[in-house]
Amino acid sequence: MTIEDVKAIIQGDETRTLEVKKTTGELKDGMRSACAFLNTAGGWLFFGIAPITLKILGQEVTDSTRREIAREVAKLEPLIDFPVEYIDVPDRPGCQVIALHLDAPSYWDAPYTYDNKPYMRIESTTVVMPRDIFEDRLMRSKTNLHKWEDQICEGITIADLEEQRIRGGVRLGVERGRMPESSLMESTESLVGKLKLTTDGGLKNAAAALFLRDTSQFPQFLLRMARFRGNDKTEFIDNQRAYGNFFTLLDAGMAFFFKHLSLSGKIVGFTREEKLEIPAEALREALTNALCHRQFHNTSSSVGIAIYDDRVEIENTGHLPDELTVETIKQSHHSFPQNPTFADVLFKTTFLENWGSGVGRMVDACREANLPEPEFNQNAAFVWVTFKRTTINAYNHTSSPYNHTTIQVHHTTSKEQAKNKRLKKFLMAIGENGANLKALMDDMDLRNRSSFVNTYITPNLAEGYIAMLYPESPNHPMQSYYLTNKGRELLERL
Image 1: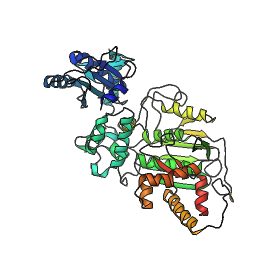
Image 2: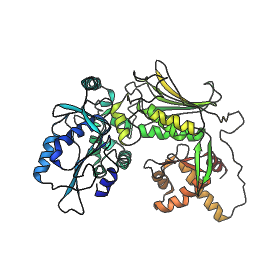
Image 3: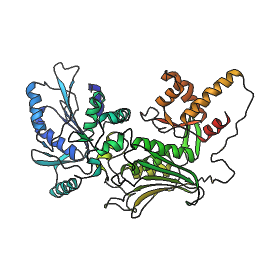
Image 4: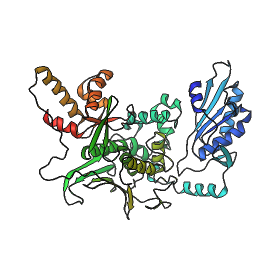
């Protein structure tokens, strides 16, 4: 962390997730706020900044200062390990700002105390947590002790996890301020520990569900996907199954949406924007929720995607939290994750929000696209969300499953033939399930990233042959590319 990072964080005034102190002479008061952050929404605590003017002063940090901080941190219970950073103040030699970053709690975490008292945050004020709230959260945490996700996963090690997925998620967490910048320099083993995916020296089942490379020992790590003809399950047009960790299943599900839902495009400035008939962000949020909040302990359970002529349904095994119903879930509500350890990792890596806002974002995305709001339902075994399709492209026995665009075929020169051959290889590399940039470059046996993007990615996005999984964030570390209907039609003709 640099002094510029500090300036960016403290812009404005103290908030629910920010507190500044002039010196560690206010250390005890600061640690009460640290405890409150741990019990509320996480946050930053700085020493060496004037509270009213927000002027960065720093202070002299001695061995005695560090020992005093360590002594007060030890008064937090349950015992917690978090980084304390010391940042030099450029125009004040010998002075440093002291920064502490506290993670937000998950729904099932035990409440923290400082010096035997619990604290919480109300707006920018730290207060003692009321007894009824403390007892409720303590009782809730005790019911979580034997959850499947927190049991040790026998037979797997750090080497069995997908390091690229872990580091990509951590990078997102740092960019959004949910993880400290120092995380970027830590070992994979250290990161897995800080994501609370280890227990008693072993990896938790949650680590396997999130990052395990070979998931063959877990039959429940399954995503069922089907495109039906008409509006019932009488006849399949496409029926697929994908096995893998959370990220593998999320990618497979989004690829299936891109394959079977209509995609439209328009030129904005110098780029072409592609949009699914149902907003990709709403589908991604719903699928993320289904994969996160499902029943993992049931080995016969799975998540399902069903696409009909008139609707899309995403279902998962389980039930809504007792605090919510299908009628109230669209109202403002707190987060009640069924798998809190799993959800906490997705929150820190920005794939999930922590305050029950996901449903609201789905509703808003559908409204902006002039679509009906998603509908929620449940029965004894499943919860499912339904998105209505207003632009219906029904299949028939003679039509292709894609919207065709007329492509003129001309006699080509040898140079054009070579170019078309390379283009065909590129589109085939993307395939039906999509691919990220690294996989595409490997398939094409090319090494120059900038040249590859300029030659293959940018022009094919502009022509509408491919689309991004995260169009709102082109440099997203989990970015993948998918064939559009126009791209599939081109591939058939090349």
